[in-house]
Length: 276
Ligand SMILES: CCCCCCCCCCCCCC(=O)SCCNC(=O)CCNC(=O)[C@H](O)C(C)(C)COP(=O)(O)OP(=O)(O)OC[C@H]1O[C@@H](n2cnc3c(N)ncnc32)[C@H](O)[C@@H]1OP(=O)(O)O
Ligand SMILES: CCCCCCCC/C=C\CCCCCCCC(=O)OC[C@@H](O)COP(=O)(O)O
Image 1: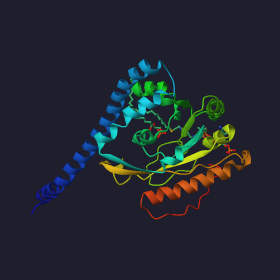
Image 2 (image 1 turned 90 degrees about the horizontal axis):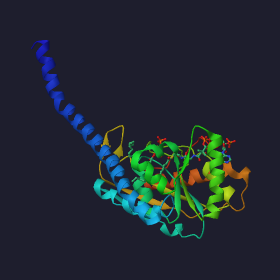
Image 3 (image 1 turned 180 degrees about the horizontal axis):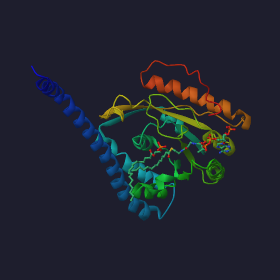
Image 4 (image 1 turned 90 degrees about the vertical axis):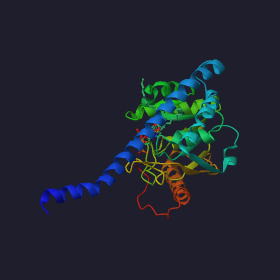
């Protein structure tokens, strides 16, 4: 057999794998594009409802937004198993911290969002068309992650608003999306905020998406997300010097729960979270 035939046979054998790869890449991008398109569409539908009902930018709009966003999961075969909802039943403000894996997190966020709760988001989200508009109408607080001093002064103002307006604030302490199957070290903003406002912290953990959503493997199928709302952590006896410790404690607790919910054996983390 000459070399040409050998090459053609080899290519022919590879063809099914090439087709499978192209079709899975296509399917993945199609699903992600549909997700973004649906977010834009639902936001465009929710915006007039918010304006008609509440007139402008207010946390009250979050009720409408969460009801609308909760329909998204049916399009993508996502189910939620929620435990610990009773831990949200506290009077007054608190800081809620949770892990952040992907843009799909908006479904998990809205699935359990308590009343009078706004989120901290990167300012770039403001420019995401109708999604930006709906975040503005819902009272989302924007921060510039490239300017620590600006972010800090905004957080200080948020601490005051939490008390005066009885707000809960949802922060992703990893500071960015992370779909690695582990938690990133936590930034300290959420913990400063809780101490400045003298309010408790409620950790929320979502199980790993990697079995049904993985950008690197072009994987996006339906799946079940386990969610656990943990008991509140009191901060009333703590001061600035305890922040590193508190951050580390929350990180460790959430990491343990994350591994348990994701059915993965717990791997002790040698690296300290402090000073990150
Ligand atoms: C249908 C469509 C859907 C609709 C969806 C609607 C909902 C939308 C939901 C949207 C969801 C969107 C989700 C998203 O967009 S996630 C991305 C945006 N969110 C975040 O980044 C939140 C988490 N980040 C932080 O908390 C950071 O700490 C910030 C951003 C505040 C600063 O980060 P930075 O990297 O710049 O600095 P650093 O953390 O290394 O800290 C540096 C030093 O400063 C000290 N320090 C920090 N903070 C404070 C403070 N407050 N007072 C006094 N000091 C403070 C700190 O101790 C440290 O000092 P030292 O300890 O080393 O000495
Ligand atoms: C006319 C302008 C049109 C702009 C179109 C923009 C398209 C965007 C459309 C839909 C996006 C739906 C996503 C829902 C909200 C996702 C919030 C989110 O997850 O933000 C990521 C942020 O937490 C962390 O960002 P990085 O991981 O640091 O990066």
